[in-house]
Length: 362
Image (cartoon, rainbow, N blue to C red; front, side, top):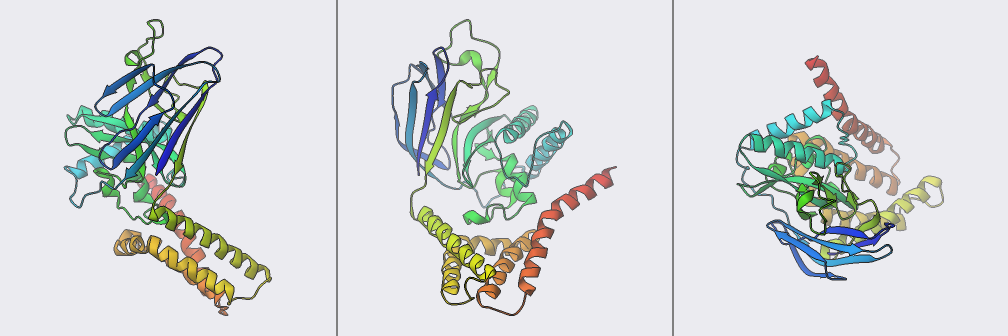
């Protein structure tokens, strides 16, 4: 894939702009990186490369690079996996008590994932397992800022956010042709992400800082999101990350998305009575189903193999059974009814389970 970070400085007075520069790491290979101008200063350390630019108002900077990403999941369980799971769950419970803005149904990481990663890394460090926070982006339904944990001694990456997410929503990644189990995230990640570097960083170690601005504060930032915990949040400009997917898998996703749009247009026309079932609408659905099977088929099989995830696999199958009944002109609404009931249950079940756990705790 091709990525570009574009920043437009908007401050009234000139000032430094700091940009993390991604590099090679497990699950990530960066190539053909190019900056639109040379940095004024640069800091390079293991797992961290940061450049700063003194920009006047209206000046811009652009970073372009290409990246290949891959899964780092392993077939072997991570060392002390049960202990890692316990630390994540206890950190999440403590944050919930303080009003942590976690919404598992939204699937949106960003600042909440950073708060969780910080809590988990601090808890692990206290137990004698040094850990740090990694800032990055997860490439799912767009590009979203994300943070996870790196276990320094083991060289493993632990993703507390998606450990909790996939536990509550097993089919979370099905649209991307993946079906990871929660335990996968205790020692790896799915490979649909870009890592920029570790955090936090003491502000007094940042380049391009004069003595008057040095302070005992910590910097957390992504190329297009500044975290409010940072007293140096760069709110004086606009930074955006642009991603252009490339490769055969990206083309398959594009064709599937186009075919899905045609299929749902056909479904709407049939529902409104503008066209009859069968004929071209049937061909549209079969094309969509064939492309989708190539993208999601193996992941759907993996979901069906897991007892706790089978109802989510059933939901996907009932969805297609409902479409087949419509496009084939079948005189029944049973598949549609079963699909709607399964869809409702799968979304209510996590809330019902948590309510039951709270009532037992009380």
